[in-house]
Length: 328
Image (cartoon, rainbow, N blue to C red; front, side):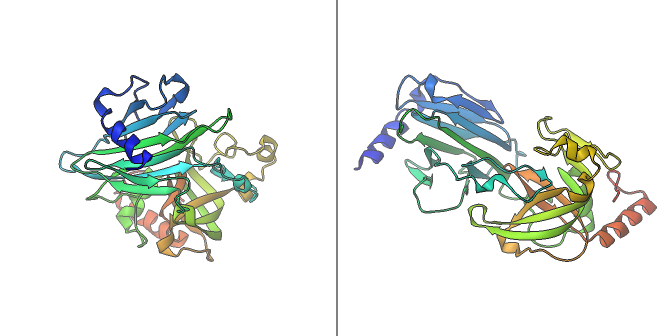
C-alpha cells in the first residue's frame, strides 16, 4: 500500500472525529488552513444550496464537503458539477475584446476525491493530464461528499483553492434553462427563460471559440439592446434596464467616461457558453439572447431569432397569458 493510500485510509477513519474547525452550513464557504492545528486535520463543511462556491486560503490538511441541496422529496439523487478556478474570470459585460485570459493559469493547490463505498475516487488532480476544469459526479443513495486534500506547501507564497459547484436533480421533470440541451426552445420554454434568466438582451453573435477546459463553445455577443441583467455584487438583484442608458454599475471593469460618452449601447459585448456538443457558431441575424450564470459564467438558455420572439410577444399580448412582462 502506497503512502497516499495509507494517508486516505487514515482520513476515512477520522470522519467522525474530525478536527474541530470552521464548519459551513450555507451556499458558500471561505476558510483558511492557517487556523488548522494539524497538517492532516479534516474540516467538515456542509453545503445546503444548489449552487455556490468554496474558497480555501492557505490550504492545509483536508476538507470534507457534504452536499445537501434542497430537492423535492421524490427526487433523492442528484449530480454535482464543480469547476476549479485557476485564474480570474473575464468580466461578464465588456466593451473591448481584449480579455484577461492571457494571464497564465495558476496551479490548483489541492486534489479532489469523491467519497465512494469504503474508498475515495479521484476526481481532480493538478497533474492528472485532463485539461478540463469542469468535473461532475453523481450522488449515491441521496448522499454526495468530496474530500479536498491540500498539496504540500511550496514556500511562503499565498495559495488559494477556489471552485464553484452546482447540484441538479438526476431526473428533470420540468424545463431547466440552465441545463437545456441543444434543441430549439418551445414557446413556453422561451417565455420561462425570458422571465427567469440573468441576462436578457438583443444581440448578434460575432465570434465562437471552443474551450476544451469547459467542454463548451464560448460565443461572443455584440449586445444591440440590453433588456435585463442580474447585477454582480447585489445578492442576485435583477435590474430591468430596457429604458436605462446608464449601465456602468452592472458592466464590471468598464470605464465610467465610456458610458457618459453615450457609446456603451453600441459596443457592449458578452461571453456566453453553450455545450460543445451543440456545434454553435457565429451566424447572421439578430437574436434574443437569454442566459443565466452557471458555475461563475453565463450559460445559454434560449436564443430565438428576433423576428420569432417578436411574433411570440404579440401573441402573448393578444391573449393576455404571459407570466411576466415580455418585450424586445
